[in-house]
Length: 411
Image (cartoon, rainbow, N blue to C red; front, side):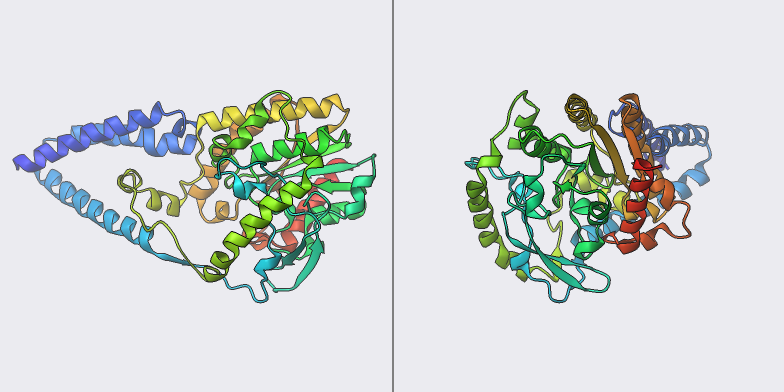
């Protein structure tokens, strides 16, 4: 019985410590859901355990149950770490037509130039991941998804910033909401590229809008709540951090040949690897002890996967504040589009974990008087929000978002 008594008190102390660490954590306390689950609940459970400390038979039963659960969690965590992730095979996918932008180079040091766009005039393949239809289109002169002649125009209606959602991933060329938007409001420029986070999106604005002296009526920032803020630290620890320094730029408008050279070398180096690993991707084979004892994979699988560090939020606010100032200076309007992740609609934990980490962002944007288009408000009214996704947004999802943007601009 001495073992079980000692174990019981260890559980009580551990729960109290765990609960208070969460309550005082800047990262976890940003979410009301996590505050309740990992902060308040453990403290309440510890109090209940303390009140039950004299019930010896119950202590033995519960202690054995806790030990068995812990062992089971350990084995399940190991399984999740070591399992293979099978990617869907896309017929007719041509890796030679893969679009590569500057964000692919953010973890490489000492380059002569750090691109933002892709390879100029390169033919890019667009594939609908549901019906496998595909088409091709040449990048513009700066490596973005536009008709090249748009850069010869000085009066631009709108410019989009963002990642793969805005660039057109998982849909055919003319099915993307930005392409639909271009048909109604022309000329419009798309500066989005897959993998771009807030800092590289900001850099795109500096290099290709501010430095080219364009003054669009609308700057439409497309934000993906699945990972844009949680991965901001990787951009901030890279060369692109320099863009937060006043007046910094690389004069990329006049250096496209250097950009093409760097990106072509990266493409040549990696294309064989992409082809060989197109079917099976083996992830997380190396067990990280810090992640293991926190049961990170289990937490992510049930929905606790959308946290971001408070410092990321502070960087984000600095980026948006500076962006909004630039837009106001040229007499335009910044519109912020929020696309929720598909996993948000898997269960209530996924939903509210993402929801509560979005709230500080929306509160800040409202405080800056930035107009918000939140796709979630439309999706939750549908019978099954996941019907609008297939990896990224599917055709229906793009049409829905296009209509929301149009309605916001032309109410």
